[in-house]
Image (cartoon, rainbow, N blue to C red; front, side, top):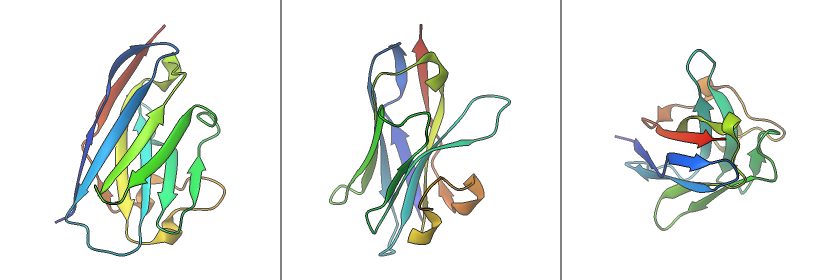
Length: 128
């Protein structure tokens, strides 16, 4: 059974940094597309970043230059380093995984329906 567990969220002031982690267990496929999404109440889930098993990464325009997505394969952990945080980054952050590397699109992030497995989320709150 595939499970994803996010951690690292919290409250930080504008301009601060956080690093989110997502530990993956029970996943036995050789290929993958992994992603971070975020959601605020009353709005659709928004793609933040993706990383594929063939090395492609995509960041949403709103976070480029501030966020970095990476993975530690030995630890089966996906990270999202978030720097220069803004109040508009406040949201619940979710990680997701799919077994097809092609689920990571080349130029933008696909809809949440692309992904088959999700974590429970970790809350990020940025105060001004």
